[in-house]
Length: 158
Picture 1 (cartoon, rainbow, N blue to C red):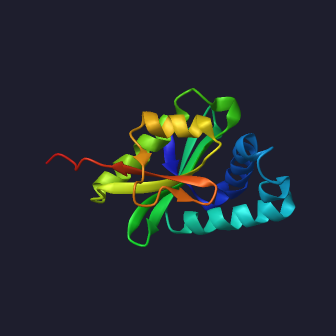
Picture 2: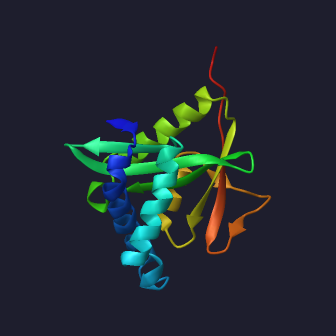
């Protein structure tokens, strides 16, 4: 089930976020950048702001949070800012369902294109996005250690 996140979800969202990030950042960046109490507090606060804006979707499976996605406009462009799935739920359709729910919302709002940044060394995520139609942004292909990808959305058929 996909639903809007609420403030009551913040602890579960932050824990899922840090668990997922540790799988692709560990060994590539210092642990302090993705783990520990300070990072947990920063992560929870960031997700809290996105939840307040109504820009977070949660995926539930068997009564537990299995994935989370956040999006919003940055400088007029729709951004998929986060998409994380609990590692023990990978390859079970959770990410695809969250992604599709984001696209549905964007299309309903008249969005025709979106961007995201993916950690260059996160090959699993890069393959996921490529399989879902995201392509390299030729205008601005990089942002630090992240690759920038674009997606063109077909308008909703009338």
